[in-house]
Image (cartoon, rainbow over all chains, first blue to last red):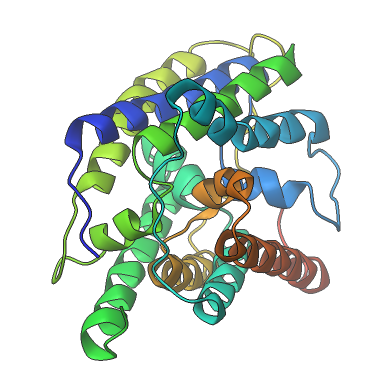
Length: 145
Length: 143
């Protein structure tokens, strides 16, 4: 399914993401890595993971769509690209992989690249390359949607 | 104050994901499909985020401590190992198939659709399994 190229909205939204990451670091000293924050709330808990700031950050994420709805009167565009069985497998892989690799698009991609972390640069190149390959095989070799 | 600023940071982060179009899995998967219906928007999101975060983190680094906390938490690990690359690879497959990464997935919980619920429930199970594996196999301090 075609989607429209939105350079300005995406650049602006991206800047907001960067601003939020800096705000979290500047005020609480924590990295805005969503997989790390969410998994930090799950058992088994290790010491030193700040529960309250993590819960507050996640609540902020959860109220974003309701606030967007109130402000604009509409929901953001969302089109699923896969059926429920594929989404289930994808979810398992995303959850398992981001915790095993200590980060996702926000922690390694945005924060890690901004800090010039060698680990994050390696992780980001890896998940980007694998994702490009996955979509190529899925759409153009296997004929998925 | 830490809780309030974390709440605001989460909200601004979530609104950024919405405005940038990244909560739409079709848009994300189209970025990953150079050979097909390519949509370069995601590169602009990353560019915008890094353009703000890179100087912002540098400024944080000039401070001794955060405004409301005692220390800046730095990731403990610095080595590139099989776990990092293996985890990133599994994540890449799932991200490519579903078009969702953890941030947009959590933001989308509020939509309460079967598709987002299935994805998120499985993502949480996957995270929990990986934590169990790391606990059993032993791991250096995790970020």
